Length: 448
Image 1 (cartoon, rainbow, N blue to C red):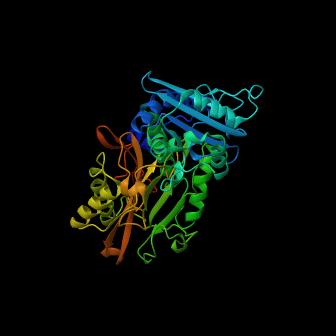
Image 2 (tube, rainbow, N blue to C red; image 1 turned 30 degrees about the horizontal axis):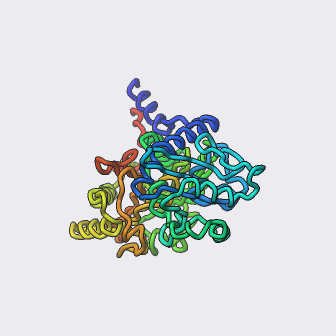
Image 3 (tube, rainbow, N blue to C red; image 1 turned 45 degrees about the vertical axis):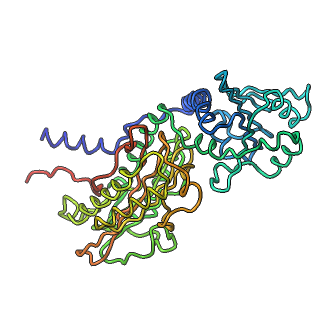
């Protein structure tokens, strides 16, 4: 009896959350502390690496540049009026100036450098600051290949050119590389938080894929999607996309691709014997997760998943290994994709790889390793030319098609986990799924 009670406690504890979710006030403090470190330590390094000594980030309220959104303090939910940030790096003096050509300081780190009473024209004040510093380059956020680095709007660009003396026009360059590096690079403290964030994501999935939420024969896939969405709201968090839940089972054909949403039936009743899959991510402390996991719905008298599904998940893990083993500094996304697919296919697998950067945005900036509809490579800068850099996070997203004779059909093992690429190589941020979740959880059997 004592052992039975212990097992029940352990079972219940699997549905509890192992990470504390802090208050809004504490979140603001953490966000601002991280921002200060990024501005004072990370930004000078990135400006030196990309050979940019002046970076202008220009945005207007409610039409924010994606980069400026990552630079605003926690109490600023939007830019104010027109906000112009000027970052000037003097490598010889080892200094970094962080100025706002705006009426206010932008948080603790960025000081207002415009008194409208002395210089009524905001653009003229910006020009004064530029002429005082005589930069070698003036980097602006425009880019053909990286949408997140292309936030400078046409009006602001034209007004800047009209105000800027002609001698500085030749110094204008794209801030593409700097903007991408700013968005993709994680600090040590951010990675500690990321581990907690992914852990919370795993906990929500574990609860969603349990008898607490799913009653086989009654609960639908849509019910679970909305439960996950509500759970995130109840926890005081956000989700950056609507969750999806789908099933594969013996009586169905595999229709279309996972991401052909028109071919994915909605509101399916979850039944015993189903392989259930979710795609789910949350936003917390300005970081994002993106996770896909699998669960099996036990039939009466079953205490574990069928071996053929256990083996299929192992196949998915092996394809993950082919990909992550090929994540080597300096390789482009297309190089990593081609090598990983080749090795996996030669080993007898039927893989598809569509791994994307993850961080300050869900589909973030950085090295793209395939897309579900571009298995031959991504022919733009982020896949073709942009190299893998250390201290970056990725959604290790892929699938492998597995033939299941017992079901007389193919299934897809679809997996996605947050992974970190650092100076010492690759690791998962908070582990990966290597065992199917079971619905219901296996409970200790009562004696006869």
